[in-house]
Every structure is written in structure tokens, then in C-alpha cells.
Length: 401
Image (cartoon, rainbow, N blue to C red):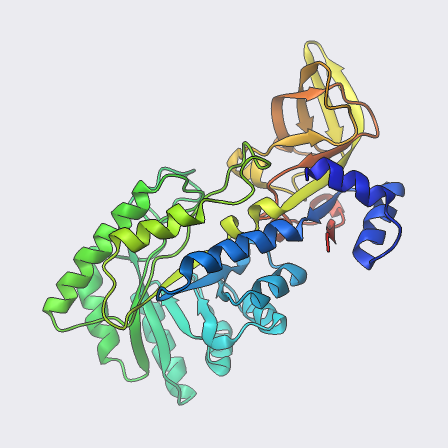
């Protein structure tokens, strides 16, 4: 069933549920923009993940930074995934949503003392450590709390995943991780520290990766490193390969689920998994990206010379990815007939910034004031990055049952 049909049904439904009634009310009252989440898509994605990891020593942690909506977190937790966190606030949100602390990983280059103490207090399963100073601070704070901190050393493997420069994380030019050239020193230091338990190595090479070759290259790097440390008598109980799997922003209806079989199959085929070793994954966008759409209403249609603008009530405050990354999102007119001639429009928001643009020269049916548009594939890094710039209100969230 297409998104258009679902939205139209939502408008006509009686109030069988709070969510459906709320969706009907905000459409009738003009209370746009809002985020619309298709929980069937989310559940199908989670089921696909669980099918692929069944029978393998794999654990998937959901990257909460992609979308920290409480309803989304609860659904993911109920499907048995762990949580990958990058702030103390995310630690608290994951705990409130029901995630077990031992199933959490705590990432990030700038963990503050209170965040480290919070994670230690609750027994978070692993800190992904990004530098020697961080390693030493965690050891110090753990000692003050009479605790042992489980860690994985985040390695920067200098692999270019060929994504946007702002979401590439695995090259030598990025701020993330520890260079392979100093890794021996850091591993030795971690083993010697009294309040540190070195569990393994952590990697993450970037986001929105749609070709498997970068993941194959990562497997090769991990295999070489593990072989090197085995010769030194060092074995790791876990390897965290990060995430990075992309989604199809161009055709969300044709490909509502990422190719989980191919993704996990790449690691099954190319990664040498040690005896009693566990492999951890940190997926975010690929889990929630396709389940969410930003619904917005056309305020004006404006023409300047040879350019037509659709001005909507959603802006970069609600979905910043196009402004920040020049990211592509499919846009559908939910009100206009599907047949008929299309014409090019710039779809722009009301925020007082020239970068507040969702699309340039996008082919859409003839569009008029009051039409509803769906900006697709907005479940990841949409609501979670929303702001109140221009003193705008944060968008509401509506869910299917």
C-alpha cells in the first residue's frame, strides 16, 4: 500500500486510536508539518535483520542518533536489538525505553566526565574509545567508582567509503578513531590499565554506503589486524564493525527495505570470525530511514521569471539534510492526481535562509496552495536533528498502528 493511500485513509478514519485520530485532526486543522511513521515498514526491517543474524554470533545495536523518538525506540527494543549511543541524553533515553545497559555501546569523540560516570553507573556494555586521553580518563573515573570499564578501541582504518564529506568517518582526515600506525601502543596501554577491560576493536567507515566493496575492504583490514595480534598472543572477544548501510532515497516505494541479506552476507563471507568471538553492528539509517516521511502543506506557489517555487510550511528546522548535505529526498504531492503533466518546481521552506531548500527543479504534478506534500525517507536524521530556529515549533509525530 502506498504512502498516498495511507495518508488519505488517515484523513477519513474514525478515531479508533489516538494516533489515527490525531493524524486526522492535524490534517483537518492544518497543523502541519508533522512526521508520519509507518510502523509496518519499521517492523519488516527489524524482522529482516533478525532473520539474517539468526544462528550467527552477531549483535545489532541501533544507533539512537538516527531517531530518538520514544515510540521508535520502544519498537526497536521490543525486537531485541541493543543500542548505540553518543551522549548521556541518549543513554538515559535508551534506558527509559527499556534497553538493557549491557546491550549498549557508548561511542563519541568527546564523552564528558558526567556521561562516562553515568554509563559506568548503569553498567553499559562497552565504551568505544577514540583516543589515548579518553582511555586514561575512563580508567581514572572507573577507578574512583571501584569499577572496571569494558572498552573497544575505535580504529580509523583510512578507508574512503565515497560518501558525502560530512558523513565520511573512516579516513585519516576525519576526527574519529585511532590511526593504525599507533594502534599497537594504544592496545598495549589499554591492557596495562588497572580499571580497563579491553574487549575488542571498533570500526565505522561512514554512512549511506550503498556498495558492498567498502565493507569488503573493512573486512580485509580487520582480518589483517586480528592476524597480527594473534601472533602477539592477543585475541579480542568482540569486533564492532559499525554501521553505514545506506537506503534508496530515490525509490523508497520500490525499495522500502535495505538489502540486509547482501549486507550481512558480506561479513559472513569476508570476515574471519575467531573462536568464541562476537561481531557487533551499529545500524541507524538503514533501520528507520524509510519508515518516516515529513508531511507538509503548500503555503504559496510563486513564480519568478522562468522559475516556479512551491513554498511549504516545513523548513530546514524540520528536516535539515537537504540544506546540510545537499541530500536528495523524494517528494510526492499527496493531493494532486497521479496522472497528468508534471512541471519543474523548487520546493522551499519558510525559514529566513537561502539554504532552506528541499529540492531544485523537481518534477511534480501541478501544485496549488493547500496541497499536502510528503518528503520521503525522512525517518533518519529528520526529527532527531530538528531545531527551533526562527522560534519555530518542533514537528509532531504520527504513527500507524
